[in-house]
Image (tube, rainbow, N blue to C red; front, top):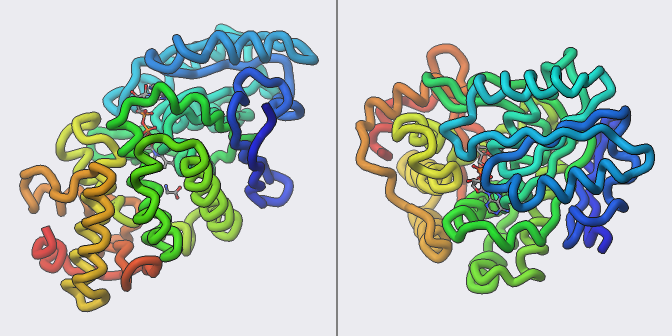
Length: 360
Ligand code: NAD
Ligand code: GLY
């Protein structure tokens, strides 16, 4: 089956398609023209590789022209999103004899995408890569926009590069095996898009939470397409986050600090973002930027999607110390994404740590 939707990320000569549909991993059509050169390395993890790696490998190996394809399977999970994993990708590329025209294919969730993308950005100073997201979170967010990176013990995603993929190929069929907790975590990034710039979509999510949680195909497709369109437009206007792209980090400064402080992998990224968005909403209300009723609506929607609304019990001071090392900050001041209510996020400079502590 061919793509239900194709969305272009408009970056001039580096523009690329996001192809969304069912059955795309067993159809050569969406892959046509995507891979240059003769070598491809599929990078996946030990949950996804057994389900899909052989199928993608066979599809590419049988293509025209035929490719030499290898598969690297990494251990799954955020706890493994580190430089060791990137190094393993380099070893596999060397073994494959990957020259500058080789292509890395990230087959998995955001963890695999971030690791494989960073390795592709570095190998021979940058080779092609293709994102094949298999989680909801990766389909609506991490596979689009070219942010790649890994964690450091001092903080989340501190080591990375901007490196745009050649294409994003999102096969909706892969979501059938996604565990419920991972599906719910993906909805945190969907809700984020609505929070920052689309109040109508927020209302649609309120009305369609049941259908989405029961994996209704039409509802899921609408949510994924809406998020990809929104993100593609933001990235086209501000690829390197010198301005509005920072809005996509609503809830993330709190969320990243929570993930790092709890130990990578304890709290899922989407769960940390859910708590983080509520903290950002609470702080906005404390600073008289928004009404408490807006915070209440967000809380209710997060509860509908089974997402956490209270951060785990950890030291507020330790969390603020983590937040100081966030990439959005400038020296000596916190820079946060807050909101004026649903659909109206803003970058706020010079936020006082005392106010953040009050919100916590
Ligand atoms: P993940 O990659 O860890 O995947 C979640 C879990 O689901 C893993 O255990 C994985 O093996 C499993 N899985 C994946 N697809 C599956 C499938 N189809 N069936 C069964 N199991 C499957 O996590 P994620 O939520 O996809 O991504 C989170 C990561 O993405 C975080 O590291 C976050 O920092 C990053 N991220 C990056 C960006 C970006 O712009 N680069 C944006 C948002 C998030
Ligand atoms: N997830 C934030 C961004 O891509 O900019």
